Image (cartoon, rainbow, N blue to C red):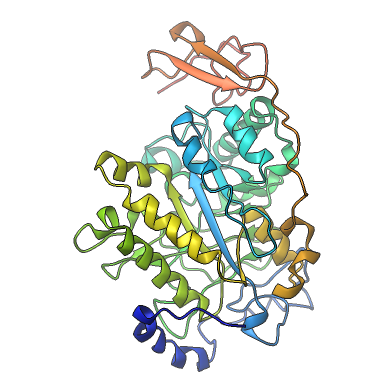
Length: 418
């Protein structure tokens, strides 16, 4: 299999050769977790720096790339998201992305359409309150459950998406909520968290450590805890999809593209620099252990460029994805599809044996035949800082009150607090 090696990145990649031969001692096997003995797929996977499946060669391992976007899905970002629908994976299926949804401003008819086209819809809270220190950090299990479950109810109701398809969660501001948050995830039957960042277990930061693969919390976690509160208890069958920090152009870690810095704003105004930054990080990962490569962001990262009269971020990002589409072992998939592979790992030449990675010959019919936009004023219990709110849904009739935390269907007269 021919693997890419752009000349401009040759020197950077030569430094990886020694790391490839180094023992993978950066992640000590927990004596309590023994894969194949007390931990067996598809329900349990020990933390590891190697792909599951016991493949004989790195060439047999698919390189998964995960694209995710946080917060509201609206008419202002719809065209951007739909603009990637003609990009295909090597099996000729459309690439799939994950949308971590928050409620306010979301157009649920667009959410339904993204789901119809094969993208994953996941949870990101109802309120998305900006007070990390005062609201999210001290949140108890009950509050985490409310934020998760009320949003899940809203998506099922207003976007007409089956509850079983809502599998994942990301905490607002990546404010990991400790055992309270993970207990809430498990009690609600959610399958994975993708809030937990790592700098230690990346393919660029500290050798002999390498990129950490997804794992379950049956026997706890060795992962470092750069943000929030990490869990200490065990949660059998609950998956962690680690967010491996990127290495920005100032040689600093960044979990999301929004926080990646550059020397002279080249990641704002130079499309070639944006593409080179993404390729550099990808290739370090690709030639080391092929841990899933995540590009996590908000649409606002691209919109910031638009406000500055440049489309360099959008163009560089798009060019990077077009380049990825030329690589025969790279699959751009949503987190739920990655999870399906983790539970039943197959070599890249047998990847179509996993139904979730394949696609039907035709897209399914819409389950949102009517688009209904509703106005809510102060009399409808909208958030107190707002003078009016609109919500577009797949359902009728209009809820009497604005749907919110503790009132996901908008049926109760419950004033919204600050």
